[in-house]
Image 1 (cartoon, rainbow, N blue to C red):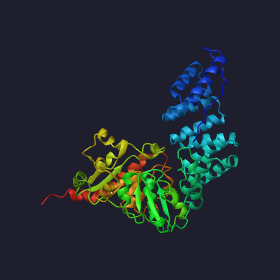
Image 2: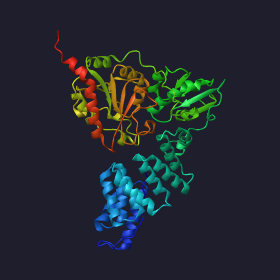
Image 3: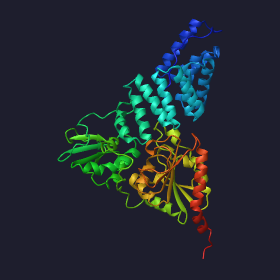
Image 4: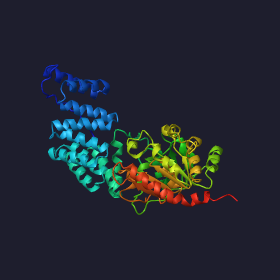
Length: 477
């Protein structure tokens, strides 16, 4: 959802400066803001508001800065102050709607966006913000209609086309979604690869070599690895470019002739294709999704990991992950703090294992729960090691990340805990996944309600662990 920086300079006279001086200072703050000098702009907006608390543009711009810093409640408060001063200002209302969406405040968010769109029906940005809000709160058909209204105003807007494509994928409308999904290469955050070789669109590959390259996260690469045997079936030599931690795992996939971490030299392949384009090329629909491929787990776990897993013998062995990549834009919505998982450690018959890797790995030690939750994450070196560990666990409970894709590709039972509006792959209002038969989707019932979801998970986990609890309470012979 885009925010706009207000440049409105109209304001009542200041006690400490003339209106002309105040307008000049505000324009200077806006210029600093747009150059990325946020701290300096912040100070000036606050100084202007100290002089005149009724200056709406300074409230809205200060709120925009706070939102960019992840300070969502103060940002919403600033937007609300601006709206209170100018209730029919559509720009202020759309900013307020964005802030309320950040906070999962459904009614306030949709109300603000609807009013803004009614006030300025010919503003594509405001219509787009309204459409995104409708989608975030599960009103997908209404969101499509609003995207269409915005696209009539800006037919070639890449951001609008992208957001509409994602909405179609959420609805399972893959016939439309895959074609529109290609607009992703016009997004600022995703740079297209140089066209060193022609883009493959499904042509026969007999006698040819094709480079299939990853483009996004580990999870997306694991998801699309199921298409690699289908590429090979077109008759060519298949080179797969992906990050090193995936190489051993992918070496078990039939149809890969070679794996590389860096792009091969120009002239060594005839076609190239990004992995996330393969579902569309092969005409994927909900009723013909290919099964995950055979992934190669390490033949043995690292010895320290094996010893740690053995500590849970006789109990229900449950792996947990609480955060995906912290650089992912929506990780704040899909991830939780480790503290939410810790009550599971008190359930009789359960032994928890942390599978967390990366920046959040240290959360376990900081929580004080080491010993209760055994840390496997630091003991695995790549996804093949992780696969071997997953095969030794009874259940994986986690918020969405690459481990969910790996575990479900291996056929391991996964409870994937989803925010109200999750990744498009998980569709809408269903607990099963046509992409992963062993994955159970457990969703927030209301936006932002992790409490209710974790209480439900705790009850079901206790039921599942009850036989283990009874067994472990039997007296020794």
